[in-house]
Length: 105
Picture 1 (tube, helix red, strand yellow):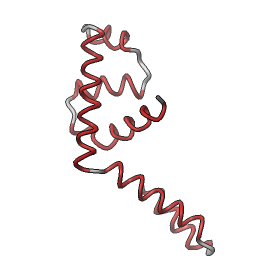
Picture 2 (cartoon, one colour; picture 1 turned 180 degrees about the vertical axis):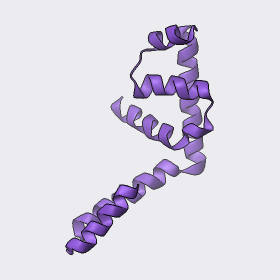
Picture 3 (tube, one colour; picture 1 turned 45 degrees about the vertical axis):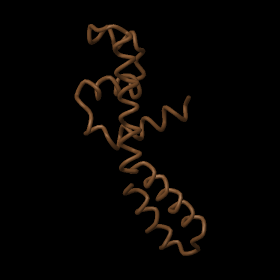
């Protein structure tokens, strides 16, 4: 479950600008602020089922965006390469440059 939550949070970070304001609000409240479905439904005066359906549809949309654009996949691949570089570099000056590169991510 934690792995799914982490993945959805990353996908949300990458693709939130492609979502509607309502989708963004539901996802922020559910995944980032840890609101329950009931708390979100009370805030927006809709049923708990409506919130649940919206969140699931939005998750599917985020996965579809990732399938097409691969932003998260490329990000994780770059992170692994940078981590590997940091392990293998012997020069402290080069390590510092790679750390700065990693911080830009």
